[in-house]
Image (cartoon, rainbow over all chains, first blue to last red):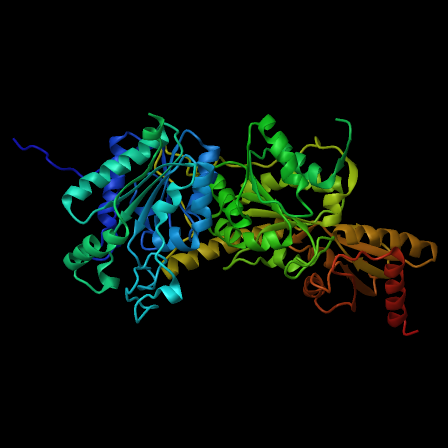
Length: 250
Length: 356
């Protein structure tokens, strides 16, 4: 007799991911999908695909999906959630999408306390367009548009979105997580589940920021990229819960 | 129902509610702000959602989301605000999402001014968004016509799965006229929105709302499918009115507020024994080209009159196909002409045509 010890979640389709080898996007998609399935939300879920490396993830999440213009996912999610308040609405956005072109939309969605769940992937670079500097690119980090390394004089300090959004009264749950090792992968999944649970309980805006990797555009092996994420990224982007209205209420 | 005396912007808002609009997302801008103000007060009475967005960009993307979820939705703005919405309008056209966009036009370019204008004709009919797409676009001249066309716009948007634009100049937004908001909308057979991303709820296969086609052959096929739809709109939705067309020597071509001023000029000229008619486009996309094929043989010239330096005149040239001489009269920047200015323009053109 055989025993099933692992099964792919029903919240992912059989369509293969379009991500580069060693990229954490695929893993994060699985965590989000597992969280949706385990909370029993798959049938009422509506996801928003961003512009960026995850642009075609409407092929991967096994629920209704809406592809949004660059940075506008929180506005699109707002439109859906306001007319269908009993559905579960989530967006999946990268750092170019959320922390650069879409800052107005994410700030105001949080400000209104939109009852949506946002999955934010911060890998400190523009992946799909070929490794340009992002607002989240670390100081000194070399990219195709900061070939000599990012300088504060030219581009300012990297933007910390979780800390910024946590200051907004409308945000209900903000946590930064990482997937650079199995322990953190498990923690990250709990965070994602919590963010969806916040929506189920109608507590308002929830966002999980993933410190992620981009081995190809960082010019590293996947293993080195994980190490760099752990040592350099987390040093500037500390992990932890920045806002938790359930705790504040206690 | 008895007629109500209403301000244009408020009449448009009520028309939207009567047309089944269940969600509105917008951003304040003069001269259309009474429209969202009215909806912020009354939308809930109709079981709908009103939300003031942080920008026109966000507003149109909220419209995109609500439409993707299968709900009748609208936004309104004025010229510079509609410029900001173009990205979302292109996405709606690409993803085949219905929606109604009202443009209460003011002067431009840039911040321009806040007085009535028709200088967005090309923005409305050609779009500022990227790609091979068109919006159905109507340019009514009275509040009754505006109310009727807004109610029908929601149906047409659903029918074609395409954004519909209503372009009125600021005067129509600001003036008061009696309107009957309960006149019946023409009946159409609208299929159920089985494509909507409203949560499959375990009842059907999942739906995807999307405008991305990375494979060029797939994008070409998609564009050709859209093109077919636009051809159907061109065949079915050309709308216009002809006034005094039977024995006119000159036909004025004008729409919206400019058409109303031209009507007065036509009456003045009639008293002087000058036979002038009006070809008034009601749909500006598709442009009513068929109207130009049915002009009386008495017509010796066309005089295009616009509240711009001349934008629709290019469509007049296309529709005319070189058959008649075309003249132009325009005021812009928010300036409205006196009746006499139109009368003079007609008389001058007549003089040229008669080689006097």
